[in-house]
Image 1: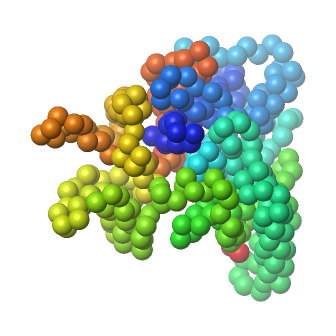
Image 2: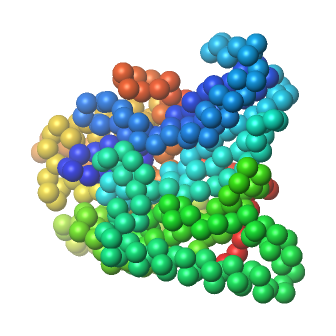
Image 3: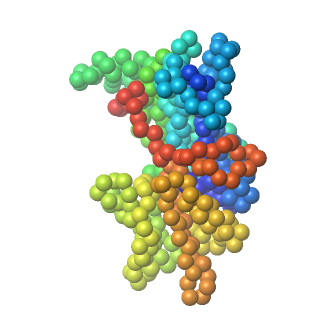
Amino acid sequence: MMLARFGGDFYEIYTADEDRSFYDALFVGQRVYRRDLISGDSLLVYRDTIVPGAEHHWASIHPDESPLQPDEDASDHPVASASADIELLDIHDAFLSLEHHTDIDVGGVRHMHRTVRRVVDLRSRRDATVRDAFGDSVGKSILRSGAELYAAARDSIRDSREPGADEARDAATELFFDPRSFSLDDIDGAPAVTFVVPGVGDHVTGTTLPLAPIPAAPPEWWASVVPTLPSAHDSIEDQWAGHGYTVRARYDTTGESAALSMSDSSGREWSLGRIPVPVRHVFWLDAPALDSLHRDALARAFDEAVLYDENARLASRRVDATGVPRVIFAAAPRRHRRPPGRLTALSPIPVNRRLHRPRTARSRRLPT
């Protein structure tokens, strides 16, 4: 489950499919929602618009085709397909970073395989710009640095004599710097902006050019992010310092999971289980103390998460000798899709999640 915390409240962030398929043509877009853990209401914060546009055009030139019903199967060999997959990357305060993959193979409409990054302001439920996140002055400086990094990378590709340089030069002709294609990161506790330069056009092949992260001066809202970040970290272990105790995430040699534990000031340590990597944030429920309404909502959300799919992780709540519940919640990465379950008036029909989207040969990243 992916959690966001801003304005004193917790929200679950998830994606859901938007299926507009026909028997002989598959059109599956995606939407991103935020769910208030207190009320249970879901609000749309981001949606793919390319797949619905392709579906609308295809339907207009095939007026005799009828949309598939929920109980109907599609063809095993459709003549057209268009899909979007949105990968949730990270959340800093109310800013959600995501990667949006689009694959379209629709004869007579377009052929496109594109990857972009976006940052969404979960408060306003709109795409955010660098200036929205950092202000005009700092935002202009970051955009200027991004354009300079892109120019330097493009020149490096153009002048390269390494094996495969000709192919890289051909692929680079599709690339154009997009000031909206970025994500927010944190480096040693400070914010950074990472631009990913996408291909542009109706026949792009999915090539992207990731640029080096650009450090930025912390804006005012970053103060709420700092307590969630590791107080100490290296390639083996991350640590978060609480009030009289420390949370540790020790990474295994496979790089796929981490052992989570908690130790007190005397050095005694308790195992909390294993969770997928990366472990990015820890939300503290004791400083300041969280009220019972929010605690119950969090416990209920984690209990519901057990039913999401076969990859569900358990969250436990224990009662100590005084009868006071002691609950620890760690923000898990890449919680994508809500499973079948309780719906609100603003929710779509949800589907089972996937942890990530494997990259295909069509989605290439050029080295910087």
